[in-house]
Image 1 (cartoon, rainbow, N blue to C red):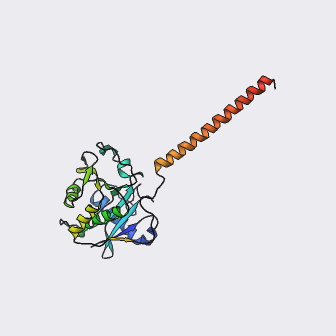
Image 2: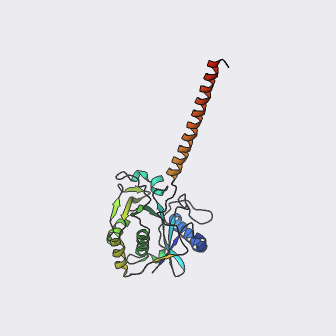
Image 3: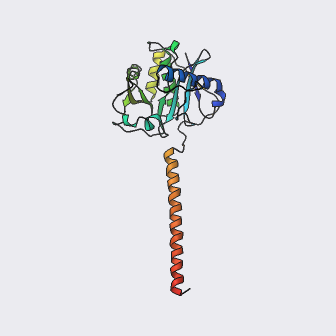
Length: 251
């Protein structure tokens, strides 16, 4: 059984070796096995969404990282909003701080199993537990369609945001899973556990803590620009009025 270590910008320094292993295993899976991205010279897979907004669950068993998940608030730039918005034609791109995009999941080859009590289900349990603890309403994102029957087997309710599409010979869909107590109870029952799978080291910022999103920052910059423009207009009008006043007086 895995333990899922919660890693983010505040405690990543405690997981230097584990995080490096995580990035190398990502490279093995997403570059060498899935061929989704070109090889990296340093053998680590990183993308533009590995920012301080991301929270990682590193599934550790036997002293090694065997599975993972990356969670990002959909109010931040995320893979669906920046790369796959066209796959949300039904409901639109989610942009809510209480909806988390779930990406960068892998299971190392020797831990893959067709059974429902394996490493993938253990990771799903940890994700649901974390999401429930943090007050999230939904988790999901772009995923291969074969995950949908797995969600169903866990008795999870997954809502597609649009139609499935084929990319490079594989079928993908954007879907989000409802977070609730019943979903956690169901997967724990399947695994035959009652205990938490999460490990939290050092105090952490809550996932739902208000962050300045790119949109909010843009709005702030725009508001500042508008204020500056209005100030310039006011000064120009004042100068013009003063000039007219001088002209009338014959100055």
